[in-house]
Image (cartoon, rainbow, N blue to C red; front, side, top):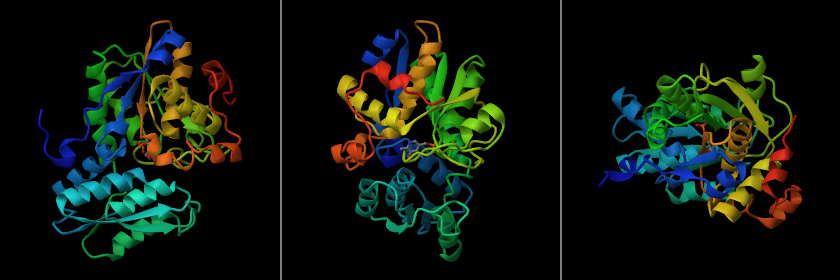
Amino acid sequence: MVVTGFSGAIGNTPLIELRELSRQLGRRVLGKAEFLNPGGSVKDRAARGIVDDAEARAVLQPGGTIVEGTAGNTGIALALVANERGYDSVIVVPDDQSREKIELLRAYGADVRVVPAVAFTNPENYYHVARRIAEELPGAFWANQFENTANRRAHEATTGPEIWQQCDGRIDAFVAAAGTGGTIAGVAAALKARNGEVLTVLCDPMGSALYNYVNYGELKPEGDSDLEGIGIKRLTANFEGAPVDRAIRATDAQATAMAHWLLEHEGIFVGGSSGLNVVGAATVARELPAGSTVVTILCDGGGRYLSRTFNDAWLRENNFAKGQRLAKILESAPH
Ligand code: PMP
């Protein structure tokens, strides 16, 4: 099948049965291979959805500039959509993100503004800097992935229905982390619309406020995480009202060990957020009857983290282990 352009190549990613994981658990764990999107991450879908919507509303005009504040993957996706459609892009990135992602953004021709990583309440936070640039620059459109629900709708219209079709409606649970919340909210809505019995679970990193929000109705962060692209301390329009049944959480140590486990035992090379998602999926799978099917998201590729997750010196500095057994990874869950 021929697709048209970069945007046409987004989506319809494989749903991969994680064979060794499924064998050890006695439950099927399936990973939606979003790292195989043409821009290399799950954010290609959100970027396409946001730009399509902006064009349809005529808030982005020919020759205009797409502006966004991003942990990296959304910026990478927006820069590529911008190139495809003849827009400029200005991408504001906090300086605690992997240098691989920042270098990719520069290579793709985005105007990259690296800003200090400060709290959301600080006006110099990348989110506010991006908004101000968009306000001041003529012809600029602020993508605003956190509050712009074209993000969630992209997943409700594509990722969710693809998963449903690919597993023939035989799905017992869906588990994922949230950054903007667009992926989990959109996929959960699409699955629940088809079968209200599908269990939807947020797997939150430490330091994020959503675990307590989903389970206890209170936005309360506990602990800390350096995982890129996931975890948030506020309620976004994209996450608000998501049909999520409950939340669990996992640590950076678990996520990192799982990213290595997937590489070593499945030949699947993905980043830490995917590692966390698979920890969550395996945790939920173990609570379900044998033979159940649990689906999660493989968000981006491991190549974006060669200087961190897949760097031995970095692992040592952070006291993270690789080469752990599955049971060991899962049993170190936070309480
Ligand atoms: N993993 C990575 C690596 C990401 O960049 C993102 C996007 N922020 C996510 C997971 C989470 O996706 P979402 O924003 O749709 O919640």
